[in-house]
Length: 280
Length: 213
Image (tube, rainbow over all chains, first blue to last red; front, side, top):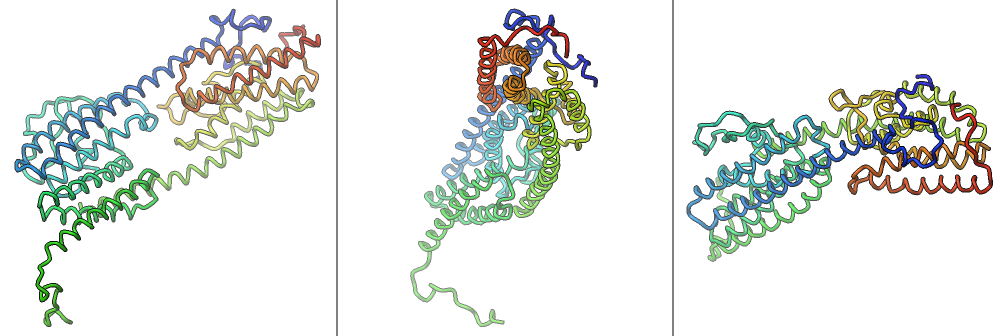
């Protein structure tokens, strides 16, 4: 490129006689370039704002679903609550489809901060529902399978027929698939443990003596999983690990209290006895 | 899939991420080194003797750009990318005393402009580079006077004022770009003071050979 090549340069036309640039502002190529920048930046900021709004809606609806799901410990008709939660989560998935639509052709990491909170909340809600139904931890693949949107109306029954049936696909929404990234999944699951801890303490209060122990075991598994990841994940995960430890401690204490309270009083059965056959 | 297996999977993702981050860090270091070398070369224009050598220095800088390592996408590039955008626009200014376009700056650095075509120079990074250049130019104005060139500050002043008008058109959010833009007014002020000092001492006159670049 010779230094005389003016193609890449934005020269102010007419030389440099005028010190005051504003008189020529409207015709200057520099100003014209900045007008273009203004449009580009405005478009980007507007998209960011739209995504933030959708993310907020997702957060609110997911939180409401979680509140709904907590009621399973205190009512007898668990199935109707689960069905209602399906409806709610379906609405959330439609919102996620909107996010996917906005992100079409964009670099998702550029806008990730706008919607990460909502997505984490959704992961928390959907994994909570999954645990209540199946007593297992939903996998990232299963979550993402539900976020593959189709154009066709699904005529299949919305609720899974069997315990192990694949999750229902979202109906009547046409959008590119949205994929939750591993760190958002981790953060959502970390928040899930808080809800599970609440459920555990709540079920103890309701006289349910099985759920607390199941939950404690499950929480321990999740905690061990997080410990395995340790500090190799994003910083937020390490922070949540700390809260998780506290939740686990509360749950373990509750189980301990139950066990102690339920222990029979007679001295002869206080300690487990070793039968001679068991000794090697 | 058991909980343990699931977490092992996730850990796999995170490890892969870490590895990529490491690779990127290495390449960033190389690029930062290259940027420092180009900067050192261009800094010398502030020396009184350096002024005459501006064209040769620019040519050399362009050569050095060509020798730079390939880019790969990531957030970690932001700093070095803005640095390179600054150097590209600075070289461009030294050559033709005008604002290098984003496309041209990208070409100098050796990357694309649109995301689809690979690693690209986004609007915000380009503008950040322009603002860094503005600071460099305010310094150049001062040193021009020291070196005896009393017309360059006037030209720089016009240019910076135009940049300022341009930036005023933008609707910036409270992000790093906005903060950097806030610094522009100090550069404008500094250059205005240089021009004022020259005019009250009768040292500033319109250059007779304005066409001579």
